[in-house]
Image (cartoon, rainbow, N blue to C red; front, side, top):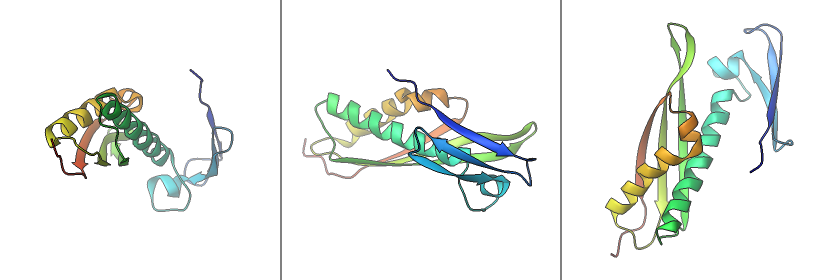
Length: 146
């Protein structure tokens, strides 16, 4: 399997400095700053990129597990909210809230919830972020006909 690479450059001190991030070979390139990370400034921040990675990984994992069980989804949409909070040792990611909605024909709510929970536990990004509390709110869009 390939190794994925992204990079970041930071110029100056924490509060008045600025930086730029590049994802992969330039699929995304953009600025980040103290304001974009700790306030409401323009640009991105590491937590948004973690959220995007987690939402993407979880959606793929859930889709794969559903298909492997014979219930290929028509769609899976996931939002990840990464909470950056100030702790006694400085800022840290305390928890991540995953919200997913899947359109899956002919699947019971119970089977969907079980698969959604397993996907949360087995998604590689969830595993690497296991130091944070990860919650899941999963909604099955299609009504079951089984």
